[in-house]
Image (tube, helix red, strand yellow):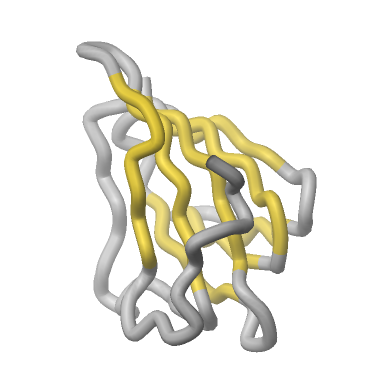
Length: 101
């Protein structure tokens, strides 16, 4: 499989696909197309999440800061650190690789 293949032209919602998983780890490809979290929504996950922005651009929002992300940028988000996707690129797809553990 190739991270850049089999991406639908129209994405009314973010595309989230599990690429591999075990009892302790899940690896996902996430494709955004101008998507953002609802203004009143915050992720509060039970697992750590390491995320790599592969293509496009995005802004992640935390309680105390915003983080602009460009291709190659990555971050480790500890379990229960509240965060949301403030924005993703309006032109072209944003592709993320996320590892939950």
